[in-house]
Each structure stands twice: as structure tokens, then as C-alpha cells.
Length: 149
Image 1: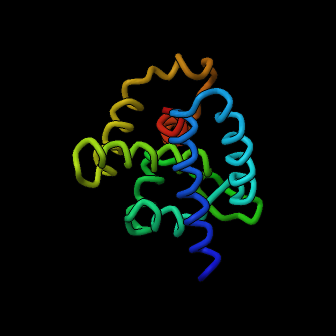
Image 2: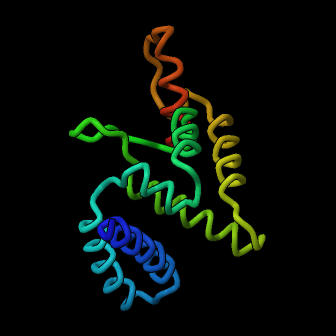
């Protein structure tokens, strides 16, 4: 269990450093970027669904529902587990934190709704070249496009 707590702290540090990097001047930005890159290497490219749910403050069941709808990206690791890409999770945490700062309450559901609206508004042909589609590939394509949004 302590490893999970360490991972959570590392991911929270990545979020804080990204925020600081945006506000910093060029000289400091390069230093922050090197530390940020190192932290992202330590955490790894993906985060378990349980850890992501814990950081987002939702149940793993809710997170799995959003993954199955394509609202949150997930990848299959070489070990065969579905995990959340670190970059996607950090972006989501930043959006939630920004929404919380602006409205003073948890904004995860509204962030997910906004992402879903954006994904639905994207024209398929804008993102991917046309190719023959199989009937059963449509659900996968929808999830893929939503995750790209």
C-alpha cells in the first residue's frame, strides 16, 4: 500500500510542477521541465485504474464506466491490464482542479460532460482518413475519437 501512496504523491507533484512551469519564466521553465521529465519517468507511462480512481476521487466502477464510454482513455499494457496513460490522467486532474478553483466544488462530472460534448462534435473525417469500416468497428472508432478529443 505505501507504493500506491508514493505514486499518488508523485502524480500530484507532476500536476503542481506543470502548473508552476506554465507560470515560470524561461530560465526556470527549463529546470522545472527536467524535474518533471524525471518524475514522469519514475511514475511510468501508465497508471492503474485503481490509482486513477483514487486520485480523481471516484469509484473504480465509475471510472470503468467512463472508460467503456470512451470518455477517459485507457490502454492495454504488455501484462494485459487496462491502465490510464499518465499524460491523460494529469490533463484530467488539471482540468478538475481548474474547475474546482473556478466553481468551488468538484468538477469532474462537468469536465467529463464537456469532453463528451467536444468528442461528439468532432467530425470523424477531420481526425482520421476515410477507410472501409466494419460494422462492429464503429463502437471502437467512437471510443477512439472520444479519447482523442
